[in-house]
Length: 104
Image 1 (cartoon, rainbow, N blue to C red):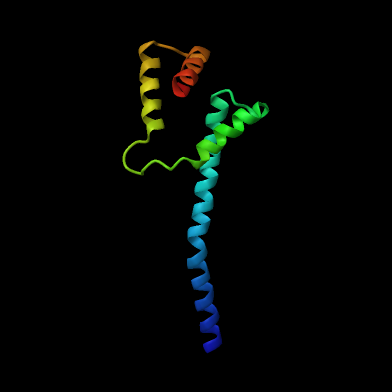
Image 2: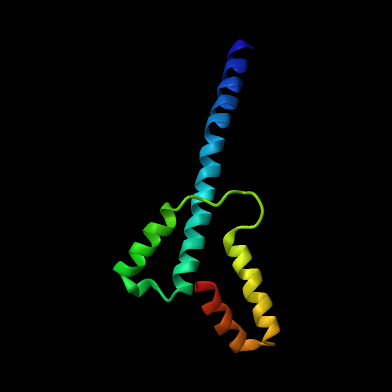
């Protein structure tokens, strides 16, 4: 009975210790995905070598935005959407405008 309790307690403590690491790994993956999308939107595709590498290094080392309110990217997206709507852009024109607006 005591051995079972010790094993269960040990497993419980191990899970408590490893859970924050798993969450942190997920955050890093999300950040990598976001930086990749930003690099591609800026025309820094896989074949851009050093330029892409420098951008990715800077993007990944940037501190995460505080969780309060909207992030700068969300605000930018909202403003670009509003402007595209005011200009009555649609289809490829809207895509092109949004890409340049968000990267600028």
